[in-house]
Each structure stands twice: as structure tokens, then as C-alpha cells.
Image (cartoon, rainbow, N blue to C red; front, side):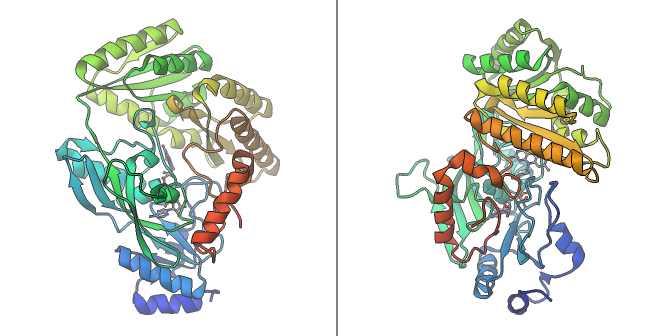
Length: 456
Ligand SMILES: Cc1cc2nc3c(=O)[nH]c(=O)nc-3n(C[C@H](O)[C@H](O)[C@H](O)COP(=O)(O)OP(=O)(O)OC[C@H]3O[C@@H](n4cnc5c(N)ncnc54)[C@H](O)[C@@H]3O)c2cc1C
């Protein structure tokens, strides 16, 4: 028996046989892909329509039962952990492409569709959603964490690609924000209020998304550098030249070593840039020559990526980075974190962080979307070793403080969840209080994903 039995009795009456209470289902929904201890919801409901979400939310609201929205559960900062119990509303079955307009280059989807499934469905139209994250995540979850990824350097984040939303508010009301017009000056920008809100203000059930054309040509290159500084200098120069960069990803020598071990490859174990240029054939060829020159001047060794198979393999290697990093110390926990700074500050923060980690003896491979100034560390530690865990947490804190001091942010794309809550005041100052005012106005009973982003 839990505190919320009356809510679950009403939910069971409304959705007979669909309120899951079993341990296994609750465990699947009580944690994302993070080092934070799991916290199981008391029950799970797999919603199928916006109206069902609204009805379930109304019943929870009537009984003061917390609600945790759940997409694919790939979040990294403990966002789906039900630290106050309650009902988890799983949206993964709401996975339809509702409409596409090739002329306007937009589409409307249900929230549980993954970006991979969407791009598969769009293939025949010559359009795609230009956001490439390393996980199988739902579009609603991605909007809720303001996700981005390898293509952000060119196409922006989820915040740039979402044009409108359907949202169920904490009292069960359904609202539609934004729309299909390419611009609007009509009132407050409610769409962006929900993007990055991590399910604390409402449940997104539909999204209207801006699409882009599949480029005529894409070519990749892999470059090994003598140092991180040389690699980041090349990134800064390539951005200043305005090359048609589609992705530009950095890995340090330890991350490359981890990828070699995990994928049985033999890449040179040096700081490495993976670069993808996209556009017309001619533009791509010209810009790749320019990039090759810039990289050579900074001491890089070039490894051509010639065939489409090599191209896919290179990006598959990059997407294995997190699991490869974890493979360096099997059985250990990993504190995966991301920060983002102005691109020009990358050399400094990477040098200072590397010195800090070396001094502490912490194993932490680094990879990142350096075209945006965003990088990730996978800090490995033995859960049983309290001293090592404390050292890792302290080094993590110093990393985040360093990023904020350099004009950056505590998280470029993973979000706040439980893991970054304590840094928001330093980053936002009085803005944090304004966030709380908004939360209280929209969700006065604090039922939507309570305890995430900040405590009230
Ligand atoms: C291997 C790996 C690689 C990754 N790579 C990247 C990357 O490159 N870029 C990046 O940005 N992230 C990355 N992530 C993190 C993760 O994939 C993203 O945070 C993703 O956006 C989460 O989507 P999800 O569907 O899994 O959401 P969930 O994990 O289920 O939920 C995330 C948050 O959104 C809320 N939420 C979910 N659905 C809704 C909804 N419909 N309405 C309101 N709130 C909702 C939840 O309550 C929670 O707060 C990676 C994770 C892994 C494990």
C-alpha cells in the first residue's frame, strides 16, 4: 500500500487492467542511464492518446499524486527517477507520425516517436529531422531535455526545431502552443517554456517540427592531432572560415583507446577530430580541402573516410563513445556529465580539467560536440570505494564551476535532473527564483516531476 492508493483505485477504474503495479515494470521506469540511485514509481500507465494523458493527470491531480512523464528513459541526470513515488506516465506507445508537409518542410508527430523512426518514415520525402543524439530517445523526451547532438553546429538544438506543441498541464487541461507559421510575434513564447522543462510543467503529447532537406553530398574525415590544443584551434579556425560543417566531434586519446578496445579498431590513440561536411558536391570538396589544410597546419595526420560504409562506420564508432568509455573499468559506475562553454574557452577548460583529473588519478575519457563548445566526461569510479566516489564528485563540481566561470553552462544538453540542481543558483542567480515563480504558477501543487531541476 502506498500513499496514493485512492488515486490508483480511480485510475484502475478509468483504465481497467492498464495500471501496472508489478516490481519489474516499476523498476524499468525508476531510472534512466545515470549513476543516481533508482527511485521506483508506485505505478506505471502506458498512455495511448492526449485525452488519456489528460484524464490520468486529472485523476492524479484530484488526489495529490505525483506524476513522472517517461519517454525512452535514456536521460543521464536522474530525470525520470520517481524520488517522490507516484504515477509514471509512459508515452512511448504514442509514436505516430501524424502529418508531413513537404512544401512547408514541417511535420507533426506524437510525442513517443523516436527520431530514428521519424527519419525512416520521412526518407521518401527527401527531408529529415536534423538532430543526431547518441541514444534511442523519444521526440517528447528530447524536447523536454532540450537535447542536441552532433549536428547542432549546423542545425541547432531541439529548441530550434520545435515549432509548436500540444501539452497536458498539471490540472489536466490541454493547451496548444506555437503552430506552423515560420515566425510569430503573438504573445509569450509558451512553446519554449516547455522545452527543457524536464516534465516539470506539463506533459508534451504532440510536437510540430521543422525539417530540412537531405544534403546532396556528405563527406567525413578523421584527423589525429598532436594535442587537444591543436585540435581545438583547428575547430575555431574552421568555424571562422564558415566551412559547411555538419558535425565536428572531438575525442581525447583515452576516449580513442576506449573505442579501439570496445570496437576492436586500431585508430591512432591521440586527440582526434571526426568531421562531417555536407552540402553540394562542389562545396563539400572545396571545404574539405580547406579543412585538410587547416588541420595539417595544426600538425594533424589525416585518415580519409572514402566509402559510404566507412562513413557509417566512423559515426557508429562515435556513437559507441559512452559505452566504450564505461568498458575501460568494467563493473564500475560512471558519472557521465556534460558542460558547454564559448568555443574559444575550450582549450583552457580542457587543459585545466585534464590537469585536475590527472592530479586526482581519475579515469575520465572525454568526447564532445566541440563545434558548440560542448564536451562530455565519463568519470569512472568504484561504487564501493567511498573515498574515490567523493573525489570524483568533487572534481565534477570543479568542472561545472569552471564552465560557469568561463561564461558557459552547467549542462549543454543532458539537462539538470537531480545531478546539476546544486549549480543552478551560480549559473542563473535571480533567474532561478523566476523559474520557481513560473513553476508555482503552472503547477501550484508541485505534482509534475517534483524535485527535478530545483526544489521548491
Ligand atoms: C548512449 C547515450 C547517448 C546520449 N547522447 C545524447 C546526445 O548526443 N545528446 C543529448 O542531448 N542527449 C544525449 N543523451 C541523453 C538522452 O538521450 C536525452 O536526454 C534524451 O533527450 C532523453 O529522451 P528520452 O525519450 O529517453 O526521455 P526520458 O529519459 O524518458 O525523459 C527525460 C526527461 O523528459 C521528461 N519527459 C519525457 N517525455 C516527456 C513528455 N512527453 N513530456 C514532458 N516531459 C517528458 C521526463 O520526465 C524526464 O524529465 C544520451 C544518452 C545515452 C544513454
